[in-house]
Length: 333
Image (cartoon, rainbow, N blue to C red; front, top):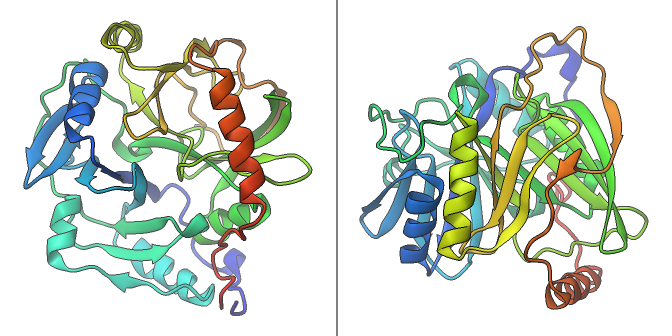
């Protein structure tokens, strides 16, 4: 790893970056079209053999490509001004990260004018851009979604290297710690850190097991969150999803830290989608103090689809993960 740059002497990226898009690879495109369109209420179009999903004026927010991974394969980040672009590129180079510009066809497939890519934590492909392609108001079954400067939403990922992942997001993106939570799941204590990049309470959540660090998940992320514009959007989608037969990972409940009211449903590719409403925003940076919470929920979020088989599967994957070293950004340099 190269000598780290002096972040304190640099302009900050905080408030100038947000979650831009998510790319999924799946063989279950018809199921994804039903899940996202009829269930969540997104606009879903089939374009050149891929599903293109919209929730706002961005031409593409979620792209599901045909492929075997059944997983999120790329996370896109929007830089909200042109001066942020060379700043992030310089930081990544200083961390020993190889950054390449993608071709025009790939940028168009993401719904952006130009696209740059690099390998992020856990070898998850990270992409960034400054100018999205816009397409007017989407056709939604829901009343709307909260995006704008706050971005697409948030995602949570498990990691066996939480200190390295936290350091990456803080050094590269100027992420700030909003708060932490600890909770016990299937007899294992989880420690979660919630990171904000703008006024959204968190754009990234990092989860790690206490003590021996294991990763019980097959997928790159635990869940992707979308913020609905109304409470009715959440409750109606919850009822639709249950009626359509999709597995509800957690019923409607409320988190103690961001106060978001939400439910979690298992996507066709196995990771979860959280649809939530009315989380707090961190409008006064000077007054915000990180807090620590016991338990992931104030109330609700009852697991509806947890079985003995799923518990054993998570345990087996966790043990197997101990044999593999997790990629950390800059470590290879």
